[in-house]
Image 1 (spheres, rainbow, N blue to C red):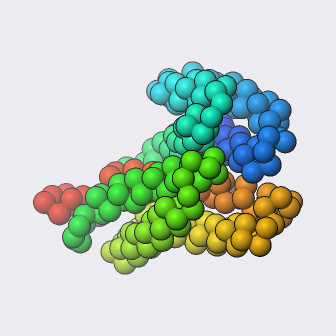
Image 2: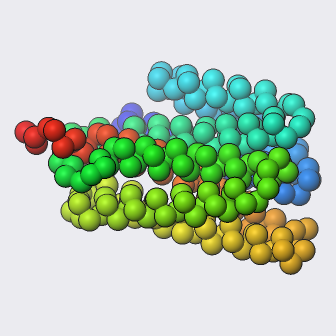
Length: 252
């Protein structure tokens, strides 16, 4: 029961953290209209994460990210804004990882499978997570007018293609592995939604609709799904490291 309650609390904290990410995106997209909402949500989420750190005892690194991110939020300028947005996405991925660690499926012995592909799934999954993280940096840079849209668009194409490759490799090699199959499917699905929202936001900018409520909603959803993609990429990499044996090893 303790594990179940902790896992439910971790999921709740992850949801709260995602709301903070969304409110921060709303601040950037609306040029500051939701600043007070974002600050209030951030304070509430910090207390929730502190509770999670105390409960789990190994979550102090997550609390450290909260402190750093909160400090960055007090500074003005594009660099501080970009770092603030990136740390927020990293924070959500970290809390999502804790929700995975505290789940009942993670407490059971892993269902070990053998990797027979090249490059290895461990390499592919870690590379995918790094590409997603880089894409979040490009997106934050574009929202804060530090870089143009081209790096973000090209990065989206590369990251999306790589994610699809990883997802297909996982589902093809291990179609009966429930955890891996579900995570790979979620990875590809959320990425598809992310690409669609990004293209919609880009087209609305071209049509001079950046100040509309519809654009605000799409932009916030785009940032939220970007954080979801990063979180799922981290969770998939962790599951692959736990369940997939490298080629050099034999399944016991």
